[in-house]
Length: 116
Image (tube, rainbow, N blue to C red; front, side):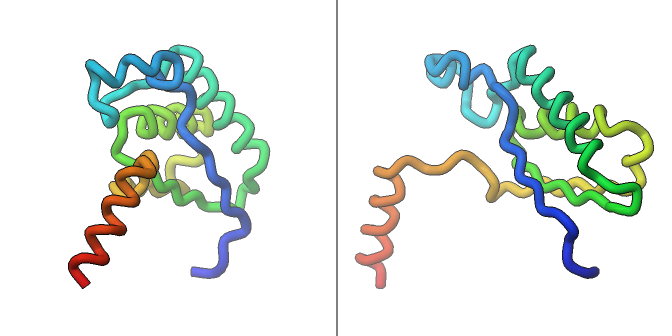
């Protein structure tokens, strides 16, 4: 496989967690879903992506297993239409997720120092 013509990064669309930070007190982060506006944003991103892609392009999509990213991906792919189904491969990558907090990163760094 040659070099890709384009690399496009798309963050998940608006989630319930973006709209209401308190939701994380009752719903685990990986189960937070998109808002209605988020679904609209993702479909709009799909239409924009369709304008950018060439008919000769193939699409490799990397998404996290988090619900909001899977919903974003599904809406984007739906907007691309049937012409892109055969030319699209979706990979679910568990290492793609929200960044850890600074405290968590510092604790991990300290732990690595003590185990070296």
